[in-house]
Structures are given as structure tokens and as C-alpha cells.
Length: 324
Ligand code: MRU
Image: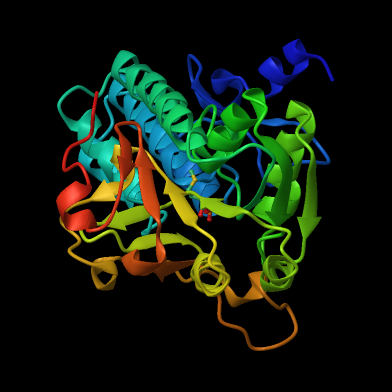
């Protein structure tokens, strides 16, 4: 697959953009089978799409919401109502509320575009820092989807893998399926295939055994919200991966922009965890569906933002403001 094709499929404006009369997204529910756009002509439609994960990933939903607020402002709609509808779609990813707050003072399309561009730029900077943590021949385990799709361009943990691959450091990527909605098996696999990076999908339950076999060198994940003490909410299953990594003496690195930091949450106990419909887990039997878990800071070797590496104690080392 040529580089131009990759650039087209994962270009920031294909993942999410604001057209004249609609927010347009790549419908992530249809990937990888179909690459189709979805036009969302109102804040209500956009909110539904975010809730249904047609667009998902912490920075990407923040960018989409910013475009939605700009659309509402151009139509002279009630911006407080639009803010509330969009903010309530997903409770865990703090980027959503952060981007909406950013838009309050200047709800224009230019401002939304600037937020989008800044998020992609942050991704590139943090990827470059995080790639520096990997040695030659790295076999990296990753969870969920943290690539261009999740961020509106380039990616957090997957961006770091991409940069490390370009530097010749990556031998293999293990992609955990990410039950129940398969962001790993559908979206991360699709992105890696286009980038030409060697990977294999594994069932989530295979992670610890792969580590025990000596087939993993490190774990790289993104984050949906990071508390002041470094406790990190991310896709359900991250906590289990962190425990397995610690048991096997492997580092878990969290890669996230400063827009994912929430200094007002003192610890993971202050982070709201989204519970989704049980039917996503089982249509036939009773089920529980927490969409995220909290990995305690003590299990995280380093948190990487666009500013660089942050090591424990995170209360001292994490930035407290978002860098422009
Ligand atoms: O429920 P999702 O698919 O929105 O969850 C996304 C994740 O958990 C990602 O790992 C996270 O947003 C960080 S990467 C941008």
C-alpha cells in the first residue's frame, strides 16, 4: 500500500472535519469492512454518533465536539444546551469537556480547527518522546485503538509505535482485540495494515501468556483521563495488562496529550467510569459493561505527554496545564 494511500485514509480531515453544513466523520463502526463517511447535520446527530462510537477515542471526540459547537454557533443555537448535550455523551474522556470549555470564549470554526491541529501536533511531539523509550527490535503490546482514528490524526500510543517503526525500532506489535467492541482487532489492525507495520491480533486473554513466553518487551497504551497522582483511566482491560506487565517485569508506558490530564481529579477514585449497554457484551444473558478501568499510578513506568517523560511521583512530575 503506497504512502499516498495511507496519507489519504488517515488524513486528519478524513477522520473528522467541519463542512459548510455538517460535521463529517469517518464512521468507525463500519471499519475495517467499509470506509464510509457520516454527515452529522446537527448537534443532536453528532451527540448520537459520539455516544454510539461512530467516532471515538479521547482527543477525537473532543475535536468532534468542538466542531459541533462551532456549527451550533454559526446557526445561532443555544450554546449552553449544545455544550450540555455534547458533554453528556461520554463521561470518562476528559478531552471532551476540555475541548468544549476551550470553545466557550471563541466558538468559531477557526478555533475548532486550531484545536484539531494542536491535538495532532501534540501527538507528533509525544510520539517522538515516547519512541525514545523503545530499544531496537521491540515487541510492543498495545490495547484498544490509540491511532489517528482516536485522536483526529497520528495517535498517542499508536503514534509512538509509528514513529518508533520509522526509526527502525519495532519488530512486532501485539494488538489486543479489545472486547467487547474490538477497537484493537478492527481499528488498530486496520491502521497498522495501512502503515505496513508487522502486527498480530491476539485475544485479550492471551496477553499474560505472551509475556510469560518472553514475547513482549513493553506495553504502550493511551489514556482517557489522568488524575493528578498519575492514576489513569483507559479502555477496560488496561488495568489487567498493567498487573500482568508488572508481574513479568515489563514496563507499561502511558502516552497521552496534556489535554487528557485532569488535575481536578486527585486520584482515580475521582474519575467517572462509563457504563455502557449490557447488550454490547451479551444479547442473550445478563451482563455488565464498564467501558474503562483505572490503572493505579504505581503500575505505570512513565507517562509521556508532548512535553516529555513524566516519572513517579506523578503529583510532582505531571504538567498542570495544556500546552498550546
Ligand atoms: O471507548 P473508546 O473506543 O472511545 O476508548 C478509547 C480508548 O480507551 C483509548 O485508548 C483512549 O481514548 C486513549 S488513545 C486516544
